Amino acid sequence: MKAIIALSILAVLNMFFGVRKMKKVLLPLIFIGLIITMILNISDWGKSVHYFNEMFIADNFSIAFSSVLILIGILIFMFANIYYKGVERPLEDIYALILFAIIGGIVMASFGNLILFFVGLETLSISFYVLAGSKKFDIASNEAAMKYFLTGSFATGFLLFGIALVYGVSGSFNLEAINTYILGCNGNVPMIFIAGMLLIFIGMSFKIAAVPFHFWSPDVYTGSPTLITAFMTTAGKVASIAAFYRLITIAFISLHSELTTTLTVIAVLTIIVGNLSAVYQDNLKRMFAYSGVAQSGYLLMALIVLGPKSAGILLFFVLSYVIATITAFAVLMLIREERGTFFIPAFRGLAKNNPVEAFAMAIAMMSLAGIPPLAGFMAKYNLFVLTAEGGYTWLVVVAVIGSMISIYFYFKPILASYFSEGEPQHKIESSVNFKINILVLSILMILLGFLPQVIINLL
Amino acid sequence: MIFSKYLFFILSFIAIYAALKVLISKKPMHSVLYLTLTFFAIGGHYILLNAQFLAVVHIIVYAGAIMVLFIYTVMLLNLNIQGEFPKSRLAKFASAIAGGILLFTLIAVFRSYDLKVLADPSLNQIGLVKNLGKILFQDYYLPFELSSILFLAAMVGAVMLGKKDIY
Image (cartoon, rainbow over all chains, first blue to last red; front, side, top):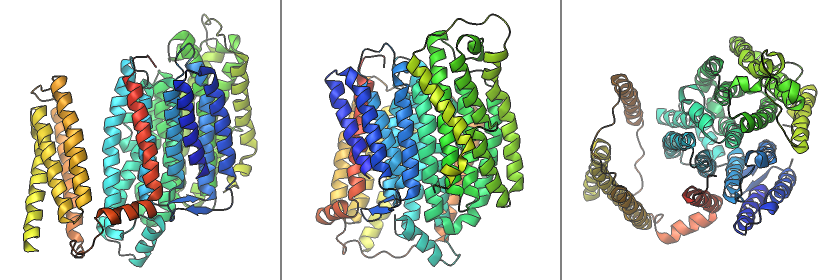
């Protein structure tokens, strides 16, 4: 709650300074604001405060995921000046939209009422639609915004219809009240309620780009400006999976045993289709879009087997995914800036001329692929153990096969930068600041790999 | 009571017919006008539910402001182009099947549930401005305030897209 208020004030202040053309003030202001927000957010830890008639619930789960979202904000703004190098304008509107999207994400991680959930989802989505089209004279960016907007509003329609049906039957928007209603039915839940719930699931699957509803993601993620793509893949996924988790564990927990089949089918399809499609991509940005689809499949696995630790494992998975993705995108942005392409050959000879960047990229890709002892490996390992303990051994087998396929495409840029033959490309100049940032992130990925229990035991 | 029941069916028929015509009409202008008709029919439903304030706001905002904007856009940009978007036969077939299954499922689901008879809407005063305001500012205060952030985001986005800079 405090985080939302602080972020709103920050966004408005930032626009105010932007209108005054105080370009130099903006980024420092945003950093200070985000750090204050982070502190305010964590200050509620362990108290589990319920605000406004159970509308907004600041329990440990929501605080942890809100902190991840604020962290995403900090990381994205860290690399904003590299992506927008040479832009004269203060760019206050783009920054404000990013902050608004984070507010929407925090609401999605902590709602206790379906109305609030919907408002949060829309705040996130509308900011994303505009951000996707923020490179206004680029036709791919326009295409991305248009496609995202049309398909996204369509999915939101399904979601809203589902919420209406659930409300119509259960008579409440409150998550706990919905659960009480299900319990009161004594296992005889009306079909109309199930239909509403499935419509909500369709909407959520669209937002996390799970497989039957993933068709928007490659075009949108490829067309959007790279910094925004990094933001959308991470923030959108974190907020949506947190909301999905809240819906399933609070409102629909009594129906969970009947939902597992649906979720399992979606997860298996998402892992297989995502990984197999990523194999064929030469454009790295497009490959990240498809691999993001596959990662959604792994995230969905945490919703299938609900154990005492699943929230912690979900948090750790999300955290490792966020850090690795943003590091990779930061290097990608730098290379795109210099070489003008997202294709693999742009990485040729990177290790020789830019060892730091090549190292960070390699660590990020290996973490995403799940190579021990990095964070991504520990995340996948814990998730797979949880799923296997829940009795879904075959699902784990599918997921492991998916991870093995993913090694192939995640290693393409590593191979190109370290072992490629032929003429190496020229050196890319990058600031010391940038080098330190990506090095810190790489070390964080290695450290998290050794200390996964610290994060997992938080929740 | 019988009268309002018939009115409900008439309004529903108009709403669904006009909504279908929005999709079927070949000229964009016709679609826009039919959309206005749909909004009016839905406004009528609100009045039947004794939610006068909502009905009036619905007509002012949707039928009044948004539709006028739509019509202006269609006229100013000269978008009134007649024609169909070419689609492959496979896509038409697939969407017909998918939509048909969804429709079938929803109809079956609605039929299986016997809706409780609601209290007479003319007796409960929930839709009046006073009660609506109380609910908005007590029970739904947070979503109400957060929607201001939502609109601010939409507004900032619109201004940003309207500017001439590259970023």
